[in-house]
Image 1 (cartoon, helix red, strand yellow):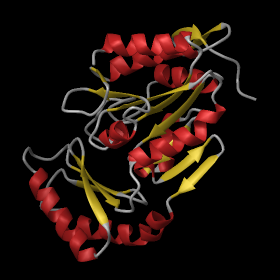
Image 2 (cartoon, one colour):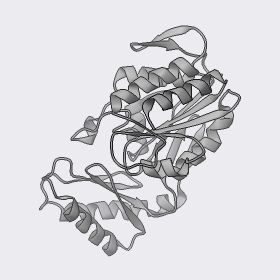
Image 3 (cartoon, helix red, strand yellow):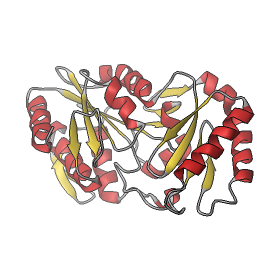
Length: 280
């Protein structure tokens, strides 16, 4: 669907007295995709709007990312936000805490798998192994074009040799190795919805998820008919709506603050919009 239909739907929900559960991916959604993942920083204007949304009684905010939990929290740095790292295998914030027990049990094996991969990849310049506790990422944004099949072949061989129940999830110039424990980003989004929706002030709660990558399709499918989903960028998608890029996401966040915020107008790091009082 087109962007205009999305904004109309959200504005009408806000006018009707709805509350909002805003869930978002991080890389490629709140921040642009960059060549080196450690350089993906959240700009202060976006951080300010997220902080104002998290303070509003009619809004709850969560960020679900493939990044490790501590890495994600350190990059977003917004009080009141729920952080879900490792594609939802670990969650913390706003009084919630969850770490998938089976994935936790597999963590030492994943560390050994990361070491095995690092020993096999020197022949592929630009490919880097990132151990993330409950998952492992193989980044090849800096590698030559066409390297993806070789990366997948090496990863499959390493997983088979390890004997671990691990699934391979392709992303944007990255291959994620995640424990196959029957828990996806989609499951995490539904869990967060059930945990956070009762806290939101409103006649009903509208769930909105925004994401850009392959794993976000799991959320789009899980929330089908139960929320509003937005794909950032091109490509085939199960999402209800689409926006062009990260700048369009920033504009959407500012509009959400104007629609679902309450109380006096305040200045939030360069974006002026009405926001509500802090939750007690």
